[in-house]
Length: 358
Length: 215
Ligand SMILES: Nc1ncnc2c1ncn2[C@@H]1O[C@H](COP(=O)(O)OP(=O)(O)OP(=O)(O)O)[C@@H](O)[C@H]1O
Ligand SMILES: [Mg+2]
Image (tube, protein in one colour):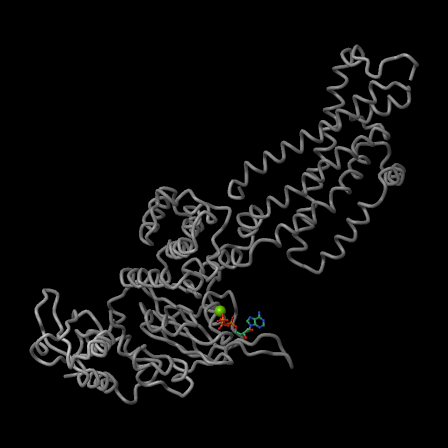
């Protein structure tokens, strides 16, 4: 019963998102240099990403996230192991053609300074030989999609945009030919937290809309938890420590390392992932004068309200403002236990449901 | 120079206008060919450096040696082989352009930001597309700076080719010196300076026109 209640709403299964392809890394390693000075950048990583999944690679600096990402579009060739996209071993494909089917965004954005914004966005369609009318329409559409006014920015050069606007153009350019796979290396790293938050929200909306598979690199665990349907935690030496949906990562870290990495406040982070709509509420409104929260809020909001108002319970209201139940400290604790219990004990950590509440 | 004669005899200039035009044309042609061939050769050398970066040292050494040989010495050395020909003149002129232009093309290509190169390759540019659509356009300001220096230098050097009978504005300078006659000497000197300034300005204009993004 509980399992249904918790998992159905928070699970976005791959089948709903036909726009993406599967990605699988099988025992992939990358060694830099040879002999005595050899350096392991990525150490025997296996990782399966379902079509439409948003997989965030997270870990401390130098743990091999960028290397892993670049092996997927063959900017770097693995020393050993195989990578499959949509079931095809990419080492058997033409690298240039492969890259044209994969969206690629890097932290420094890498817009072409000598081309206008419209020309930048049109990069891959031009490489693919689309006709100019189709390209023009696509560019307009994409600029609007990422929240820019085509009429204003189209003819500008990259230096004439702000950092946040450039990031958006970078995303638009990567999306141009509707790639079934996007590789993003700290794409929102160089902007201030407010703009970053907005770009994250917009990109989540785009992902929900377009359904492509995403591999996203960050070293910020909060960004990983916010964005990922699955999170791959890397550790020093290019090892994969755990690959799991964010809620599971927080509830049951596979090792001390992962627990430390997700932070001592991981319970609080978990609360933020659970929507009030998915929780078994107490029946009836809270006590007279209790604070209220919308059912779209999450458990962290509820906890915060309880602590700040010193109330015993919070009344939860639906969109129409009518009370649908109440939540107390006890219920919050129960909800956390329920979510943890809803996972089968022996499920392998690299598989399992793609979970995210929004 | 005959005492009492004016520094510039305008009547001589007006009666030799056709001559002046012809020498100006020769001068432009000699310079143009040298810059054209020099540019193509420099491009090839820069390509070699782009593929095998260890070649940069040897290539700058050789073009540097060519650059330091005095022009007259080079002509003297070439005449027994290629005679008093335009080929001799051009070999000399071209060899002086290589150092500057190769160095600037290489520097321009190397100055292309790594993130621009990486995103281009990551989006599926072939190596050739990367060079011609991304690296060369971005290197253009530095390359054209090299072309400007090479061009003004070559316009100056081309005056020397009159010595091996290849005409150009140097012809007037030579004539003025040989005949102790100041007018052609000044005409030759003035026009070669004016030509250098004019061509340089044209190149600046061209650069502004083709690099709107750099403004
Ligand atoms: N071309 C290279 N030659 C040698 N070592 C390299 C090379 N590229 C990366 N490395 C090393 O491999 C390791 C992994 O690098 P990578 O760029 O994948 O790290 P990262 O996880 O992306 O780090 P960051 O968060 O700092 O970007 C690093 O220790 C790095 O020094
Ligand atoms: Mg990195």
